Length: 427
Image (tube, rainbow, N blue to C red; front, side, top):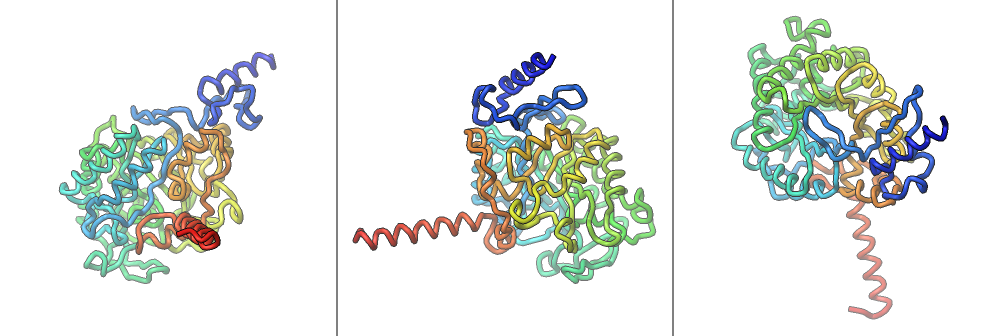
């Protein structure tokens, strides 16, 4: 019996391309064999293909949406944005999610943020999807309204929110949205999704995490309304549910719709885990296709609750949201995507094999190494070179998305070359 089970395991690993180096199964390290779970063979592998509502992905890795600050002031696509996503598309990532795009002018959250609030944006967005398609990549658009996490100087008016409650970090008093404005916002989510589909995106992702507007509606500390969009959790979740329903109505049943959702806000009276699980279960019943589980808002203080934690994996553990993510995997029927400090192939495989998530999402590693997956598949399975210094994200609003560690390394290499030339007398 033992012999027969091992034969099945080895054959599964071999046929699925289980080892990223392509080595024969007999040479695989023990950690790459697929374990038995409750008497059944778990043959899943991160490099196996997977289908989400008809969309077939080449593997189970996702490039998590990342603010690029490379668009024009009106949110239009630039050559720099196209080049960024073309380079990522060459990296064999299963699904690339483009940095958040704002659905209406007052939903912008930072300089150079991508826009999807006008039909005029579609042609530029199609340049991004065209670049991805040239390399066989699948690509999704993330859509958002930033709500109170914006600036009057940026949008030309007072930022809006479910209630007139500022974030502690920004200290800007927002204006409470009227019911008609909420209904307009919901309609604009649908229009934005339609533009994403028209531009050739393979899927759309709703951003309901990190303290942006839909997340603000869910939390008691930012939503103090007494009308139908406030009160108990069902009321606070109404705007999100109606936005999803509008998106689904617009794009159709056979188009993948994903969501990025906080497992918790990790602040007092913010969205709690049990509340988020209820929201996720409801969305799954409504037909959401995949849920990327993140956490934290602008005001989150403890390290364990921040969405972008420093020093992973040297000072902080890998996959820091995993204890929460696996609860979503157990609770919902939709595809669950793990994100947050994942840095090794071994951890990625473990998450999948142990049934804690269905896909693996990373952000910062792909900033440093757009072709990280190619390296892992070639046999070099050392951890992602990203050291989680967070300089990339801190400097993005001012210099655009890039890895500054790579920049430092290139400068040092140049200095070393110049020094060597000086010693040898070369010119």
